[in-house]
Length: 171
Image (cartoon, rainbow, N blue to C red):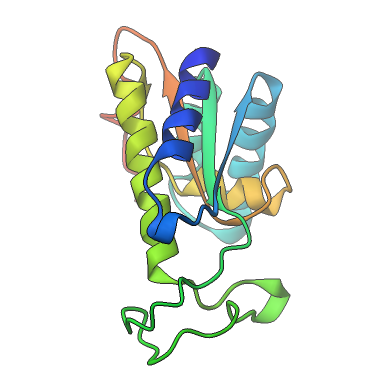
């Protein structure tokens, strides 16, 4: 399954990017790192009173690997397109409290989305069950497992039934 994860990362890295500028990065985690992440997700969900972090954590524990995709120091595309709501692109992404990015160029976000789709497609073509998830990315960034903006995870598994679907929704 690590080979599948590496090929997913390759698909993400070779996906098309706006103006040919690449700010998308990938990181593969497996083994004990998945347990560390799952435990942190459980704790974070309880601490913040958020639902389904425990459910997703259980999926992570049962996964073979996780491919994280994220943006690394993305700069605005400079197209002055207005799709973000601003009339003109800022020189850099606006940074707010706790060094969090308040503004993100929509073209860079689209690049990340295309890379996520390419990685998930590769997993599917190789018969690896997968699901694009935001919660693992949020926690991975908080615990320092992954550095970057907009961290999204794609866990993978090979089982007789896809573990990422028919999951009970918490209320």
